[in-house]
Image 1 (cartoon, rainbow over the protein chains, first blue to last red):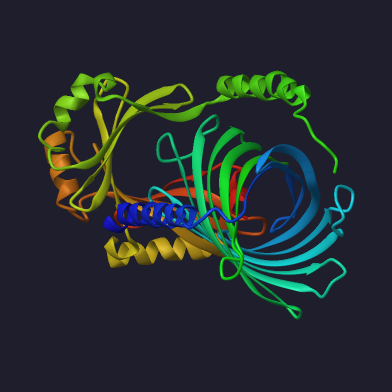
Image 2: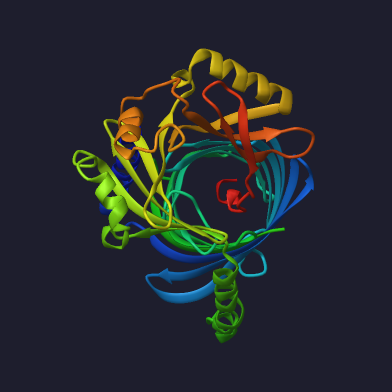
Length: 230
Length: 200
């Protein structure tokens, strides 16, 4: 039982330590983005569900304040529950980039396994993903693992109208035939609000350290998402 | 590059759609717990807790609304165990619950509980277990606290088990109450809260 408090404290300590050391590392390239998302999930069969979402990325800072739309992602995930706390999913995503820049559009396939464990005061989520990114050049293969913690902020269970806290750490590895492996790290902290049983609003920050073994780039994302669970 | 300026209609959307939704939410709540200060906890209840929480950690006081019923609850950690003590609207002790693991349930009781779960569900997973001491065991609060803190078994305590179970359809959460002999006393289904996608 003592492990509960210990785990939460350790998680935040590690998160804080990593985030502060990475921020202090240097200011090679820093960019700020705003990424709002709207998602709709619905059940197709008892254990099978779909999620559609649309997400826009706007660059708001690069040396100076700017407001440039960089891309729009449209995605669809098919999710199959193996158990109440385990699922596998297949995702399709199309990224519109050529409309806003010289970059090519991208099509992405995602395979995912998810496991959640419930503890007395918090919940942990483990997500493993394999992605194949197609954008004209050789296929990029990306492998990622995300650890998430979430818990309600008012009491021990989440009631309608209440807020919850979510934080995550994610490791990413991207490999392709024509380039060196790229390692990325992402850390996020968000606050969510359960507006009603089917509607959730989440706002947060995500710090990304990209390609840190080579030419590191730092970016900060303002994340907003509205999720409807039909 | 396409240049973007924040659109005032977003703020209009927030003010006209999202905020009114939140006020509707507030009107339709029918089961909820609020954290309250110790000062707002019934004095009668605090008197019963006197001297029992001196070495407790993470003490939090709650007021609960369950449809028309009001109750009070204090949750705390004592000697590495998580407890919650429930009182009625006027501060009379109702029950004491302690988080335990499967191995803490008497063997014969666990066997009967498992038999029930296997008959009732195709697949199930135990999410949490609490040992419950109610005033049906004794009306004397002092004695009830002693039973709970001593982890006494086979004295008429109940076992409240939350599971995710599936019969034919999707998994659903159930709160099941078993007697110390392992007989089912009550079965209650939970409405699922739609925020699972944050992890998916």
